[in-house]
Picture 1 (cartoon, helix red, strand yellow):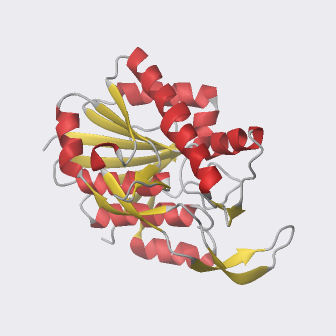
Picture 2: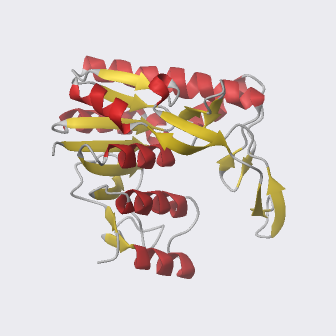
Amino acid sequence: MDKLTIVKVGGAVVEDQAQLEQLLQHFTAIPGHKVLVHGGGRRATQVAARLGIESKMVNGRRITDSEMLEVVTMVYGGLVNKNLVARLQAAGVNALGLTGADMNVLRSHKRKPVTLQVREEKSEDTRTCTVDFGYVGDVEQADGKRLQALILQGITPIMAPLTHDGEGHILNTNADTIAAETAKALAPYFDVTLVYSFEKPGVLRDANDDQSVIPLITRDDFARYVADGTVSGGMIPKIENALNATAAGVKKVVITLATAIDGTQGTTIQENQ
C-alpha cells in the first residue's frame, strides 16, 4: 500500500512567514503522496476587524454568523488557500486548493446549539449557557475515493477548513477535524501518517517548558492527562481527533513542531497497547 502523509498546519504558523517558509520546504521534501490541511483563524480575525466585523469567540471557538461566514470563506478558501497553492507550485508541488464543497469531498451538517460551561471575561468563573455557533459544520461524510483519484494523478490537495451541507451552504469547520476526517477517508487506500503541526514541539507536560514533550500518549494516558490537567484547552479536541483517526485505521498520528513534520519527533498518539 502506498504511503501518504497528511500535514495539518495551524493559523499561527500560517501567519508567521519564517515558520511557514520552513514548513513548506519540509512539506515539499516529504517523499511520496501528501495532503496539506490548513487553518487561518488569526488572518480571518484580522480581515474581519478591517471590515468592522466583530469576532465572537466562546471557549476559543469562533461564532460564525452570516457576516463572519463571508469573511472565513474569503480568507480560508481564497487568501490563505491560494497563497499556499501558489507557493507550493513555485516549489514544484502540483498543488490543488479544495474546500469540502469541491467534488463533494467533505459534507457536514450545521452544528446544533450546545450547552457549555463558558468562562466569564476577565475572571476564572464559569457559567452554563446554550451557545449557537452559527454556520459551523460537523463532518458527516468524507469521500476518500475521489481524493484518492486526485492523489494518484500526482496532485497534492490543499484543504481549506470549509465544508458544505449539500443544500447550497458553506460551513466553517475545524481544521483539525478536517485533517482527521480526510485521514480516515483515505486510510482504506493508503498507509496514512497524520501530522498535526503547530508552534510547539509536541504535547508538553509543562506548558512553559518546550523540553517537556510527552513522546507517546495512548487512549488511557489521554484520559489520565485530562483528569490531572496536563492536557487542557484546545489540545483536548486535537488529541480526540487524533485518537478517532487511529481507531479508524490511520497508521500513525504525530503532534509536533511545524519544522519537524517528518514524523520522527514530537508526540505520537496511538490506541492502547
